[in-house]
Amino acid sequence: MTTIRLTAAQAMVRWLAAQECEEGSRFIEGVWAIFGHGNVAGIGEALHGARDVLPTWRGHNEQTMAHTAIAYAKAMKRRKAMAVTTSIGPGALNMVTAAALAHVNRLPVLLIPGDVFANRAPDPVLQQVESFGDGTVSANDCFRPVSRYFDRIQRPEQLLTALPRALRVMTDPAECGPVTLAFCQDVQAEAYDWPEEFFAPKVWRIRRPEPDREELAVALAALKAAKSPVIVAGGGVIYSGAEAELAEFAAAHDIPVVETQAGKSVMGFDHPLNFGPVGVTGASSANIVCETADLVIGLGTRFQDFTTGSWSLFKNPKRRILSINVQPYDAAKHGAISLVSDAKVALELIDKALGNHRYAKPDQALRKDWFAATAAVKAAPQPGNALPTDAQVIGAVNRTAGAETIVMGAAGTMPGELHKIWDAAPGGYHMEYGFSCMGYEIAGALGIKMARPEADVICMVGDGSYMMANSELATAVMMGVPFTVVVTDNRGYGCINRLQKGTGGAGFNNLLDEAYHVNPSAIDFVAHAASMGAKAVKARDIKALGEELAKAKGADRPVVIVIDTDPWPSTEAGGTWWDVAVPEVSVRKEVNAARAKYEAGTGKQRLVD
Image (cartoon, rainbow, N blue to C red; front, side, top):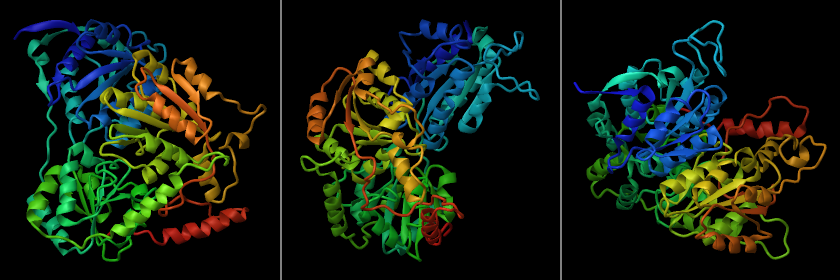
């Protein structure tokens, strides 16, 4: 056996550079790194030596550079991914939030935090977290519950098994998610005689699980017995690459399709069988067909509470749930008829078995009424009116969008409003709403643009999320990665303020003017963004916003457009009940009134078929 002597870090980097996706390029496109105590000497030296075959990018915050990597993987439909390395201690723990985000959203990312010395000779090292009762614990154990696979590299040769396990998980359609390899810093620098064949190029193929024959028969029986089915399309449709098959299947059998946050844009908004967004932030058109459906077909969805109206949406007393999913955990939720399968494969087999079977055509008037409702809330305000609403801002952005536009966001007002009223072209919507993590937006926009350089990426972010994490704007400027950021400044956490008031609470600690302060807030977002090198401008009104959006196209760096908005209004049309627990006892009459409505809502929940 021919061997080559390398440090463990050098071996890991060489191996990662040799792993390929089905399209023939690297599966791990590159590595985001903030070097420090615990990774600069070992992994840093190895990455420098491989910089011509495996790029290394420098971020400004461990969490947000991981968000960039995750957004890249999502935009690449999980066919490619990135790695992220940090120092031990605070650098590592800054990534835990991002790991949870990837875990919830089932997105691949390789996290490589530095760790303590395996030989324990210098214990306790700088930034080491010591457990009084367990000598094996380090700060990186925090990654265990939010990793699909976790390993601690304490010997060089452990990489021979750990690395293939890591990529197996990242490329598995059912288990896909974050992998953490906590890399002891002394082991990174330790040499070993590696078998040369370990570094041979390998292609990682994404399998397409086919359904069990008996499960398929049960699913087909349910489909043939149904009179008014509806398809709830989730992110699994996109990751399967089944968008075309879904559109053809729906058209062949006259089944309406509704879209979750992760599934929005699987079909163009103007497709006659796309009845729009579903659930709490859904369209009346979608929710009406769901309320009356006798068979709810979940296709690649995990049935999150915003989708199901906390399981109060599907009201037909005869309704059944058919869940088609690659992950058995998701397929079996709430007593559903389970069909464990890749979405594309399942649609092809079901379509063949149904033949020319058709259901009653859904009512197109529902779509017409919804489009009229959304057009009204998105219309530009009359000149001289007060501050624009977030919906009016979205309307202005939507009017400038084209087939190449990808709108994205994550938290606050934007996910709900965009899900409801954004007219998405196929593939033109990217929302992180599994974890709804404030601060994902700007870093995520960078990742999307790196994955889709031809796209017109528009990041919609409120002032609260912008303040939470904005430093990768400087990274995007430095790297010359252009996208547009629209900052809606409603002076606080407007979305949660509305929820607070809607559940009977007093306005408290959300809007800046209602929070404790000695000096009033006076944040200049234009100056702040410009200080990081972005092109930044303040739009005085909706008309000016449209003009600035047009100017932003073709820029050579990020463009930030700030506009003041009214924190109070939101789109009232559509939507359904959501389970937000209201205090059972309160001295506030508003809370007591909200509690009565809450109890009425819980009475409509149906948790198991």
